[in-house]
Length: 429
View 1 (cartoon, rainbow, N blue to C red):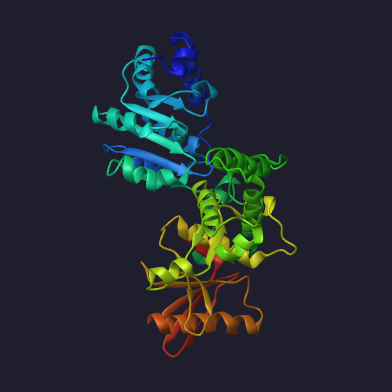
View 2 (view 1 turned 90 degrees about the horizontal axis):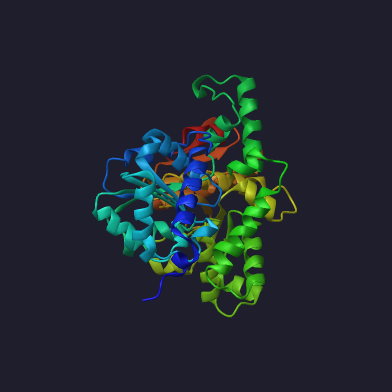
């Protein structure tokens, strides 16, 4: 049996040097703003399961790992960054040799901290085998399928999934060093300041590096990296131009409805399946999310147009195109992200009269409309009409409108529509 390409390329001492350099770099990684998801990661520490942290590139997965590692102590874990080019050619069968060098270099430690594991084909085999010996794994990956199909067949029942999103509105405020107001006693000045912060959050989004270095075009670099490295290269796509045009269209239309058939005709791709595959790749790389209409018929859910949301409003505006501010749709995108952090069961709803309600959450039986403001009487009538028709169809007595300010509830036929400040709702989410 011939030696693996990776072992043939590097000597034992070179591998040892790489591991020491990686560990030292990770030790010096800034821990940054403590993320909300740190508690979810910490709670899984005592379980014999792998902890899988998945999310967009550059969203802070390594920082979250560094925060967890800081709590553990540096003599408790090994660190591997599998995106390092010195791991090119590494195969699952090389894991035993790597583990031996780790033990020789650092001594026996109970935990593996592994970044970007999706770069190693068959990674689940050595992870599962090492877990059987009592080792603990904290793993990151930029491919959303790590939390779904791949793990379903590879580590069934042996992992705890943790999704990491860009900063929430609360994290955004903390990142900027802003005081979180007491929402029960907001002054006029604090309300104005909160609305201005929301406008900034809408414009800039929550991806840490672009917020930290606004003078650099980091959104575009990140976006191009995902399209070329995470999608075109990984899935061996030849029609790269069509992929880029499709992605540009979707990122330019946050909260927009899309039909696979219409997209196939627009981008002149061979089949609807090609469109479905490309959108699935964009979802797997965390650029977009798709939302189905709520219907008791699964078939109707599948064939109806889908709503598409971006992972980040700052990224969407930096790489997409809009001839107007598009504020209402971007605010709807923010609400989607806040909801998605809590649940995957999110739909839009079409009432019997054909009115669209932005969100329906079947788990909690909530209907939510999002609008920039309710200053125009026609807007109030439109939003209330859609909610009322939907509430009647779903036999609900309450609905919610998120807008720019709190306002007295609207009541009709025993049904109540609450009106809340979107900024305040985001802080409480």
